[in-house]
Image 1 (spheres, helix red, strand yellow):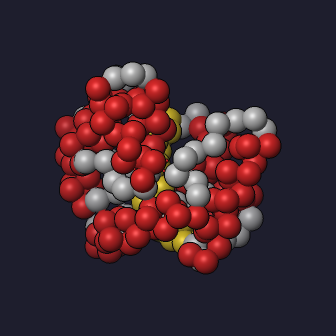
Image 2: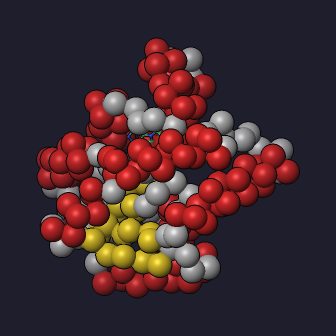
Image 3: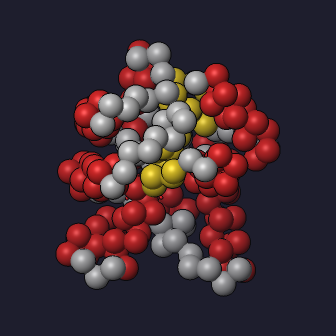
Length: 194
Ligand code: AMP
């Protein structure tokens, strides 16, 4: 099964599409955001360290997230990984290439969900409202103020990965503004070719 990265700004739909791939294809979602949120509630030293960074919308250090991914890959490299929210910096991208190579795995595609920035803040606010209505925990970073910081981090640190993966010929762009189902179908096409 292919190993892919879902790339795109916060609110682009990476988590939603990753979940669909888990359900439909039994792929394994590796979301560093989920791992970090789990760490913060686990009462560990690392959880305490990252809590304020998560709430403020900044990026956690490369060493921490690379460590999380390394640990997870060490547990079993069955392949069919969806990297969701990782890598977010060029250093993380290099580290991922190295970790995969060490496991004898390869990256099959980097799928960029191309979205209109102006629509993103609305999506984030909606996600918070839906969670609240369903009685689920609301992410502290899903506010318009923190979203602005997250978007800035994205353009400063993560958007360069688009050029990086274009150069390695792994990049595939998908219209992330289409409906959820249409986006899922476009991703399925990429996977079937990978
Ligand atoms: P996400 O759930 O992907 O939106 O991530 C939520 C937050 O976790 C981000 O705003 C960052 O603070 C942190 N985070 C998640 N993944 C990474 C990463 N690969 N590198 C640095 N920070 C990360």
